[in-house]
Image (cartoon, rainbow, N blue to C red; front, side, top):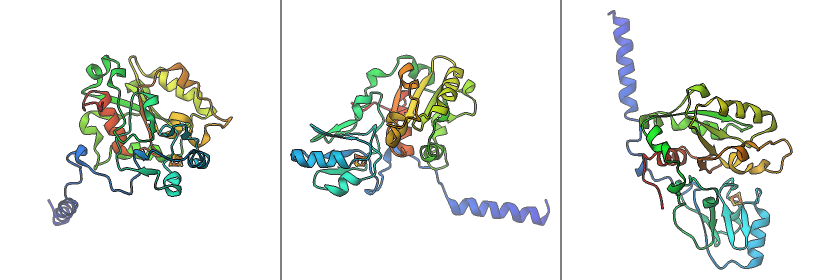
Length: 263
Ligand code: SF4
């Protein structure tokens, strides 16, 4: 080995030593900073007019007035409600928001407990078949690239989703399920269906982000075709706008039985 090559190797070792260990050793031990907007808590006792005001200011219709509630499947976590009425709404840094039941995403006033996962909805074959390895094909159905970037981040050196045997693959034929992001625009409805059909049975469907779960800001747009959701059962809802990598990882690992379910 000549002197130049030796120097190059030394420099690389130096860089690696400088970076140190970047993988988060225990994801469950991570506490996100208070600035992170996770599960909301609504104080009971807001007046009807206050509830109506909050409901009217929400850009996605996520706030219900009777009782006062926030639907995390619609919420884009803009923070407007908490900014307007901090004595009524506050966001905690709890990122464990994923669940198998759409209705479980509705947080009502006076409730300050984790979002229940509803493990009874997990198909019995999923942990057996995919508990050791789950390959997913991601389909951005009119997405804005935010959820897509966070899903990408879930596999980076920090979160290292691959250590649990969960990975994104290029072809739906090599996948065990599809991860849908975006509100499902009309022109992506058929490609999404084709990708879904190419995944062998049994297959998993995961919706990531408010747009995929409810349409988000585009819910009333005539440019959407969301009939895919009527045709196929959904295994996991991962809220957020975009969803945090830890929210996705926590949900997927619970779905395949690698983590204990939240009651
Ligand atoms: S944070 Fe969510 S519930 Fe509050 S105003 Fe924004 S979208 Fe609506």
